[in-house]
Length: 426
Image 1 (cartoon, rainbow, N blue to C red):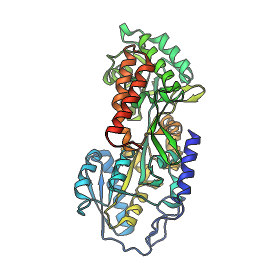
Image 2: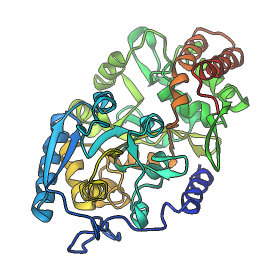
Image 3: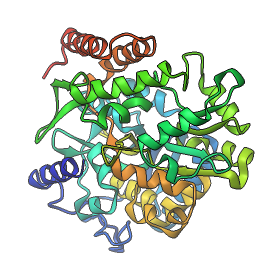
Image 4: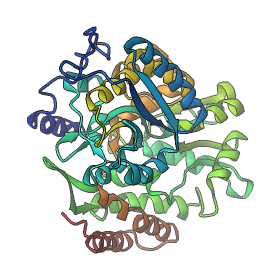
């Protein structure tokens, strides 16, 4: 993974993404601690900027404070509109070209390929400030050699455990986790050692990739959708591992997310795999008994999870693109990244924030911050949309006892057929 990240950053450097600085305020203050800031020299300061934010109350409340500070510092009015980020793209496709869209909008990174191809989002030049963000986050926002957007949030999943039932050391490796599953599972009485949604590809990816599986080949030019590694030897080994969970009754197909969450909070499950969005409810239920850790080691390495990034993007039709970047960098600078973290509860993508005492010393959140360093960004190319259903079906067949190699080979063929039918082949 580290080689992959290094390769991606070399590609970025080669293409000149880091070669120049972005916009700078008249005050010449940088918008990110330690960065060179942006430059607005030669650009007229707009009277206002429009931004679409996600419509969750905690997020918008934090942003209201941050945007007010930007207005006070720059004299630019910021017009904020709340809209689900899942609805923003549809609205932009209708309004952007007509000049009715915002200057800045908010999206998950896995939609980047579609946005770039459709000309909705504009590339941004972060200059040396790109180095201030998690390398994984910048990789997630790189498409066809160019960086799009400024990362706000980085998220992944890991292991929560009940300290009264198991120690962190016991579940450090996949072998140890399986020993806990064997010793503590009594399905008839709703007692389990380890539970996860093992038919959801998002969560099962680490066990396919940890032995060498992958979605798309990574090349110097980005993802190669013609080379799919979900049926190679490593992926099949992971599929065989997953199948043992069902064969040994460690878990079963009737286990839902609601069941997992309820039984973990009731003290009936030693360890579960899910994300930091569960922290608040788990803390309330378990208090000091709650622990968290990274995913288990497979072949001596922490299993690589999917990493998601939520970021600010510049509307390609905006007439204020330099100032739009300035605003995005202001929102994500250290002080504001920490304010957003404290109020919205989402992990910042700024590296200094990830390394801050507030996160490093947070017994629960620190594990998820660490896991992002081992994770891999979900592919951001449009062909990824053809992957989810075939692999989900394959995982269901594996749970039912079908041969993992056969069903994974069939899934990969279906993915290739779907990509070809959609006209999305490389």
